[in-house]
Length: 455
Image 1 (cartoon, helix red, strand yellow):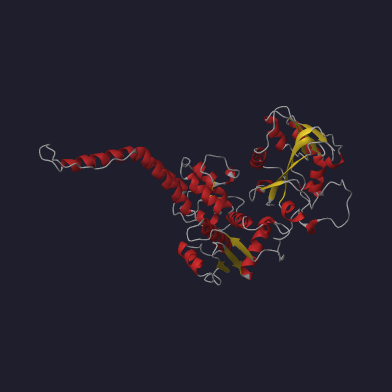
Image 2 (cartoon, helix red, strand yellow):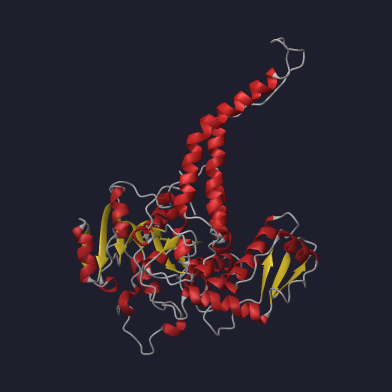
């Protein structure tokens, strides 16, 4: 959650209402207002109008303050003769008042919309960081910052729970394990630095609040967390969790059956019961080794993911870079900006045409049936996620690299935590990185190198 001027994807669907009780409306949103946490008693237009009026009146307020100080000093002297005492009536700076007013306006809307309940722990931290230098308080920026929380409150609650639990245990990233009915979810998690003031306490609170938001229970107060640290059984009934602390500062958080089931249901709802990389979704009959995977499981790589992945790839001008299964050319766009000689391979004629229309060199072919040339400095790829099909794509792509060349592949998280088919350097992407492409599948980035001497 960043307080920065931006154009949100749902901008055309979000309207500020003039009524006093409802703030946002979407033609596609059917969520009742009482479930979104709306609490403001005025429209956003009224709030921004008050902000603009008070901002404009600050110079006069400062002048009134200074005049009052002068009046006070005059009351303490006779005939204009000052005594030996120094009378300090204080001084205020307009810039400081402007900052305070701006922060107050953003906090008023944040609290009034009950974003604290809807937002994930990471979103809350981003909001706190943004408050150091907030964006201008305008209707456009308010919509861009809070619109998604109002249009899709449940989606944000589910994402918040997924973010918290993915940081606790790799099993919560595995799409094989989070499906409904699977009994592989851990019944306990280990928390380190679990002291009264340590970061482990914050993580504990994040777990309790993520689960509470999903269960529609009150968020955990500081006093409740403090009591829980002293008595690990105090929340067994109210929240379905137990805590056992150890002398080394660690703690084990145990989930009662009902709480564990809620976690399972929430994660299954967020990721989808059946995911393209689960073993249950593999075809029953054997396919040829180069068969194209089911509908390619095509998820266009979001611009933010492209930027994050390429940030760790040093591509020099003139180097040759291959993008297998390039789709519409999201990576090719960014690679070309680096001055590299980028080539794509795509089996779908429509997507290949899209990439070619942007001026990219694209071979229309099934990548697994292309002949390796070993003349590329880099391979950057987002292969199909279906089953374990991605491993064939990665292994084939390695054959296109020069000795010492580098391969970067975006893969489902199960490639790292469950399947064990590939080995290299792993770095998980944030939860929901591909949400805008139509899937909440957890993803990771694999980096591999070709041997320095060709085989």
